[in-house]
Amino acid sequence: MLKDLFRKPKYVTVKPDKPAPAKRDIPEGLWVKCSDCGEIVYTKELEKNQKVCLKCQFHFRLGARERIALVADEESFRELDSNLVSVNPLGFDTYSEKLIEAQETVGINEAVITGEATINGQPVVIGVMDAQFIMGSMGSVVGEKVARMFERGLEKKLPVVLFAASGGARMQEGILALMQMAKTSSVIARFNEAGLLYISFFTDPTTGGVTASFASLGDIILAEPGTLIGFTGPRVIEQTIKQKLPQGFQRAEFMLEHGFVDAIVPRQEIKTTLAMILELHGKGVANG
Image (cartoon, rainbow, N blue to C red; front, side):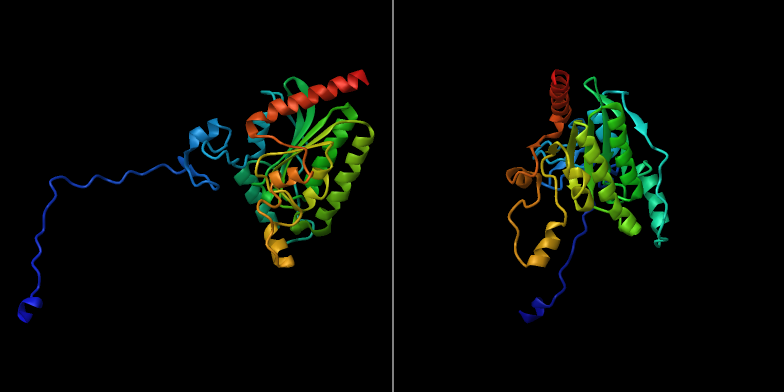
């Protein structure tokens, strides 16, 4: 009995009738996984839906040019100050290389694009930040372009619409980046004194010095669903105060509940909402 126990088993090799099918290569970028619900979404369907998840309505981030195409009337956008590019004023190690890499990867010269356009036929000065460009950080050129955008609106008596998306001031430029908070805020104060309309629109994420300056100075402040809005990120706050923060802290819905934003606007409704506000403002100016 024990002898049979240690006897080597016999194996029979069976040849398959047909060879196993070759593994098909799926082109990269054909499918996208939603970071909120985990749904695998066909890229073309996602783009048709303006990069909003078809299952949970999660808003994927848009590039600056994608958002301009979404909001501005077709072929109405005329870019301003596209020749302004950052330098390395502090000689920060690898900063020059990082700027070149961002320009080549994202396809824009800086973290904000500004220009004139029409929205449903109504002229505006518009600015859109791009979180893909060094996390939308605000350096000297970003501050200068934003300031010039409001000066343009002041000169031509046009409303300004600004879509913010930023990780804060650009650390590679030190105090020069922090100075942009004061510069942009001062020109917005002059713009406001002239009685002109400034619509600020928070998109994910808007944090740091951008939140603490021009993004929070709008006459009307709107936000996309789920947008992270704050000065310091929630993880840093939790580590500092040693407490668990409320569910959804610093998200657009939390900010709406606490009066920090005026309304949350789904992406499909942004253009019609802006057009309505601009039309009401135009009638108010005309009647005033």
